Structure formats: C-alpha cells, structure tokens
Image 1 (tube, rainbow, N blue to C red):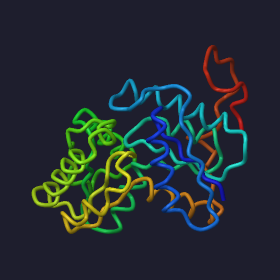
Image 2: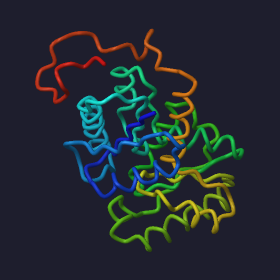
Image 3: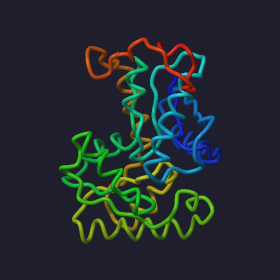
Image 4: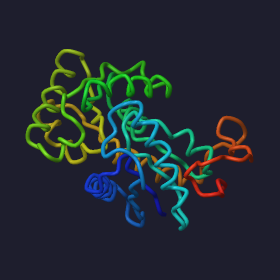
Length: 244
C-alpha cells in the first residue's frame, strides 16, 4: 500500500517532519511518500494562503507519476480536499477531519489547539462543513506562528500545552486535537500536562486511510465528487490530463 501525504506549505523541513510522523503511525507494508507543493506559501495561516495551497496540493498529487492507494492532505483547516476528491478515485483524507472524528471515539467533547488566532475561524468552518462541530468544546490559539514551531520549539510547546490545559479545565474538553501538521511529536507533552487523550491529525489520517484501502473503499463518483467536466482551462498549473 502506498499513501501520499502532502504538506500544504512549501517548507521542506516541515514536509520531512510530517512524513516521519506518518511513517511512525503506518502499519508494516505501508509506504509513505511525503510531497511538497512546487508553489505556495512557506506557511499557511489565512484564507489567501489556504486557497493557494489547495491548488498547490492538487498540482503536487497530479504530477506524481507512480501508483498510489490514498492521499492525505496535511493541513489543518485548509481548503482543497473536495477538489482532490473530484480528481481522484482513491480515498482522500484531511487531517482536520481525521483528528476530530478520531477524538469523538475517545471522549464526549474535544478541543483543538492551533497556531495563530486568525486560523481559528478556518478550523471552525472546516469542522462545521464536515458535521464535526457539535462535539467541539473549543478551538484555541497558542499564539505561535507555524514557522515558530521549528524556530522556537520550547516556547511553542509551552504555549500549546498551556492552551490545551485551559481547554480541559475551562472548556471541559476531554480530548485534545493538535491543530497543525507541524505539531507532530507533541502528543506526550500535552498528554502528561492535561491527563487526557491527545490526537495528532497526521497519525489519525494515516490509520484511517489504511483502513479505507483495506476495506476496498473508494470515493463516490455519482454526484458531489464526480470528475470535473471536460472543458478548456486557461493557465491552470495542473497537468493537461486531469483524470486518473
């Protein structure tokens, strides 16, 4: 089984970290291929960058020229998953939805701890669109930018752990979701401070993608995610052939 996991930003070191986290979660026999978009922002923290990354992720997947069995979009609250589902028959899993749906098996309410406050509405909208918002206790911002997760790791960990603890103590969350693909490897630190289960979206997405492939399930093509209609697309960076 081969699963593509696509970073939504263009920072190679973050792609490497996401790929490493995915491989730790993968079952024996699952090959993880981590991709970085050819174009886009170095970090995604707003609507403009999110829409840009949606095109970059689709471009990266459609230019990959080897067989694959599933795709994971490794961006929290980002746009683009639906576009990939139109282009592909294989399962497409978004880490936002993977983390939230997994958390709902573990407690009554979950909370998401993300990076900057401006990302909170994007995550709330994604959860609402997916029908996962009813059991979300809160979406909290750590105040740390995405790139600061690498440049100031100790400060970032402290800020994330602090907000996770507040989500449990003040918002009555029973599970914490780490709201950024770049937060891989923080589960143990947050769990030890809060005493509740902590879900990393990358790891959750890998296990869900593997399960869908093993069940032989593919994306439905009868309506919402039917392939794009054949028409002239001017200047779009995807390869000429949009079908797969």
